[in-house]
Image (cartoon, rainbow, N blue to C red; front, side):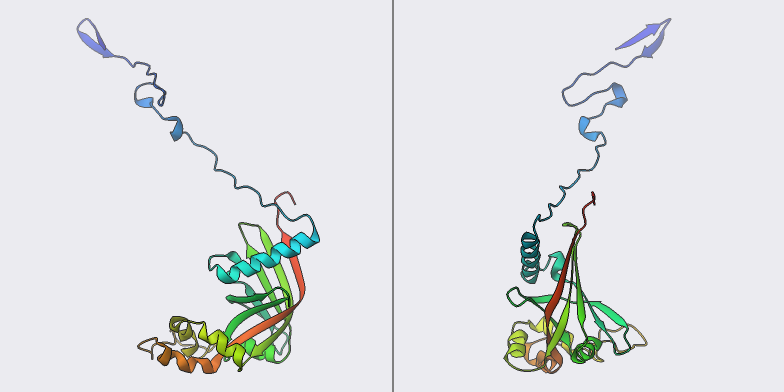
Length: 220
C-alpha cells in the first residue's frame, strides 16, 4: 500500500513471509541461492595389511585392462637408452597376469623403446589414480615378442581402426619439419589395408621384480 502526506505519495517495503523465500522487497532470496561450501568427497580408505594392499593393487590393474576410463589404463613407461638416459612415454595397458606378476602393452618395432628393451635394459611403470589418491610404481625386465602365436593372437584382437597406428610413415620418433599424422597415404582402414602393419607390431611383456604402492592421504 502507498501513503500520502500533503498530496505526495510515499511507498514502503513490506516484510514477506514464505516457506521458500526470505527477505523484503527486492531483497528476496531463496535459501538454495545461498553459497554453500563444495561437498568434500569421501577420503579413500587405504588397506591396513600388506596382503590387502597387494591384492587391491592387482585388482585395480586388472580392471584397467577392461575399463578404458580407468586411471590405470594409460600408465607411464620408462626405459633407459644405451647412453644411460631415461626416456618416458605413455602406453596403453593391454594385459595383466597376476599369477606371473606380468604387465603387457603393445608398441611399434620402430620405436626407441624396443631397442632399449631388446638390449636387456630394465624398464619402469608409473600408475596414478587421482580419485583414489593412489600411486603404484613397478619395475622389471621387458620381453619383446616379434612373432609366434602370442603376437598373432594380440593382433587379431585389434580393430582395423587401431591397427592404423602401425601404418604411420615415417615411424615413431622420426623428426618432422611440420606436424603430420603419418597416415596421409591411406584412404581406408580395413582388415586388408591394415594387414601390413603387423610387420612392425610388437607385444611387450614385463615381468615385475619390484612393486611399490603409495597412498597419498591428506592426513599423511
